[in-house]
Length: 110
Length: 124
Image (spheres, rainbow over the protein chains, first blue to last red):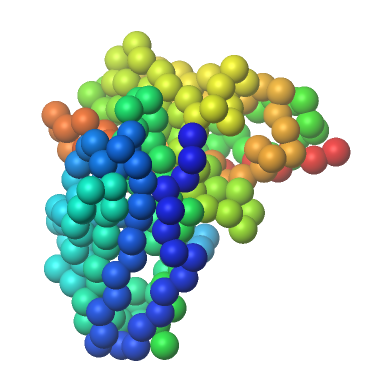
């Protein structure tokens, strides 16, 4: 089992937009729409931000959006705010009945 | 309030065993699939195990297969993780997680409820 590939870090200024990529294979991201994104502040429980590639749970800001093309999923955060600074993880179901997480991306709001 | 509360973590020597528990409340535990996810110090999230709502299907990450066993007691609204033959690399915060969406596959709906985590330290 290999982790999905995410950039280690991204940064942006308040008000800007950023995109975090999540690259898998035809055994996971490429074959299923079961891609989720989680926000994780150190010391707290992860928070679901996107499920099923592009759906937002109730209560999640519409500044967060998700998409997928081929083996790569993406999370876009628009109108960056200071409170968005956190670690972000993608996850995908795999054809081995397992779940894979990405390595995580640290978002810094400048 | 929807809640998951883990317990059972602690310090254990390599080769030892621990049993983690996860108590669920505020949602219909017996209808929901459950998972365990861990985070080693300085590392990312790692999925380690899944169990179906009835407890009839279980899956494991290669890193714990043959050493860890997931189980549940729907009458007690509880999830468990029996960890045997522990290794230093099993040191991590362990989270239980699930979805509150009825009728959805767990990995389709995403995990929208997580516990606060319990810390397992494997060291001599």
